[in-house]
Image (cartoon, rainbow over the protein chains, first blue to last red):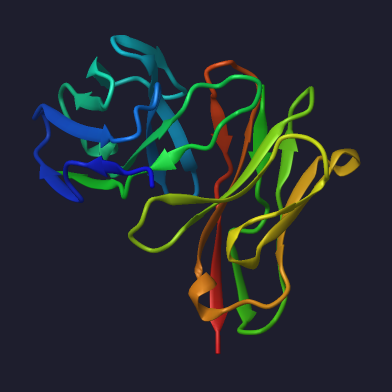
Length: 115
Length: 114
């Protein structure tokens, strides 16, 4: 079974702090994704990565950055946390797209509260 | 641009009753379509997916979905709901980019009453 783990289930930070959210997958997947989930808005893509050291902006990248130094690990960074970044953050991974779009496998999520 | 609409924010059904969750998509060509389920406190799990071929797709946990191109729909169905099906359900569409940009709907929360 594919396993995607996220470093924290719950996190409380103060405005202005630098926040790191870590995601690790154990299936040697090329693609990794960071989403945020908010009530009534569904999942919105922040960033994704299709290879080590490669990244692309998703729909809402402002205020976030990412790092992918190793294939299995994809980090989301909030350079200076703000209250409007309070949300549930979901990481996902998938094998490379060939002809068809492959399934994404999700971690359990990190619920971040910024005070 | 691709998009997904789930018109029902919240649905309540009785245990044992049938279920249909609606999903409409917008995409220029043949889309790749997915249904995911999120149980409370969990990440998302794939229920089923449609890429091509038979328009009626079977998934896990007794769910099925039917792709209807003429209606731009991909509704999820289950003939008899169990209390453990209470969760949030997300429809998703992909196909526009090679690197799997998937667009999710806003979700439908299912409540199951005894």
